[in-house]
Amino acid sequence: MLYFEDLVIGSKKSFGAYAVTREEVMEFAEKYDPQPFHLDDDAAARTHFGRLSASGWHTCAMTMRMMVDDMKVNQQAGLGSPGIDQLRWAKPVFPGDTLHCETEVLEKRRSKSRPEMGIFKSRGRTFNQHGEMVLEMVSNGLIEVRDQAAPIAD
Image 1 (tube, rainbow, N blue to C red):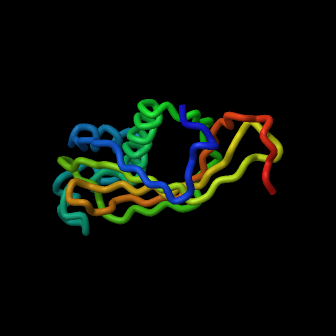
Image 2: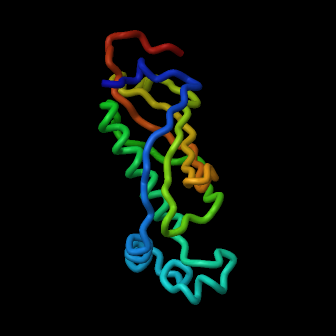
Image 3: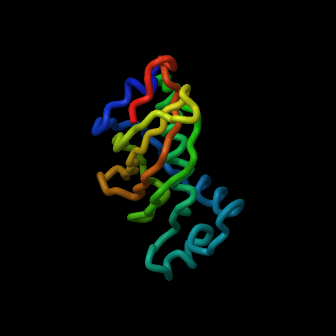
C-alpha cells in the first residue's frame, strides 16, 4: 500500500492505455456536452477541429479512469481530492486515439487538522499515441498517513 510517507517530491510515473472510440465520444457528448463538433461529422469538419473530437470533459473522465485504475493496481491509500488548481486542454482528442498518462508529485504536506491525512499536489499530463500532450492539470490529492503518531512538521 502506498501512503503519504511514500510520496517523493519530483517522482514521476507513466501509466494507462485508453482507446478512444467514436461510440464513446458520441455517447458522452449526447449526455454531457452536446455540441455539434462532438456529435456530427459534417459540423465537426467545418470547425478548427476538422473532424469529430471528444469533449474536453470526456478527456478528463478518461484521464480519471486511468488514474483510478493505476491507484487500484498500485494500492494507493487515496482519500479523494479537494480539487484542481489548473486544467488545460492542449490538443483535441479524436476517435482512434490511444491515451496514456504521466504524473509528477510537486509538493506534499501533512494536514494539521486531520493528522491521519496528507495532502499532495501533482501535475498530471495525458498524451495521445504520438506523444502529444492533450491535457495538463495540477490537482490536489488526499492520502492516508501510515504513522498518525508521527509529529507533523511545520
